[in-house]
Amino acid sequence: MIESLEFLSLDEALEFVPCRPTVAISILSPGRCAAALHPAIDDILRLYFHDGVARADRHPGTVLFCAEQAQSVVDFLRRHHTRAPAQHLLIHCEAGISRSAAVAVFAASECRVALRGQFAFLNPWVLTTLVRSAYPHYAFD
Image (spheres, rainbow, N blue to C red):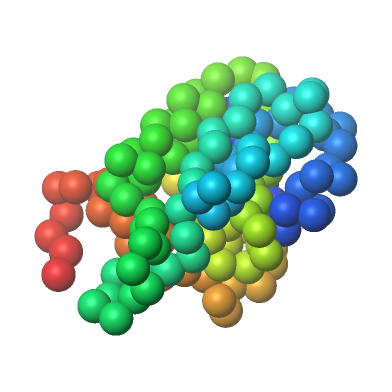
């Protein structure tokens, strides 16, 4: 079961050394090499998308967080939240303030885990896409 979580920048995540069983969600921009996270991390979901939102004037070539990626996050969380022993969830993106914050807020809600941090800049597209994927039976705009 996921009993705790945190979200970090890439630099912080690269220095992270687990002191208890840990799984991770690694978020980077497309074209980046996989983050070399600590080898003691039990499982890593690697996602590649830009920190953007759906709008008509976005830069061509921007890769947005999509429903398939959201479903992979939901599946990852649900799989690890039903397993013993208790686990810590590390979530990171490049800056640790937008993409990872949105995933962390969703994960904290899904796993009923307290979360501390700054959420002023969380990516609303990522959070909305996660909620829509996890709860497709609810009506959304």
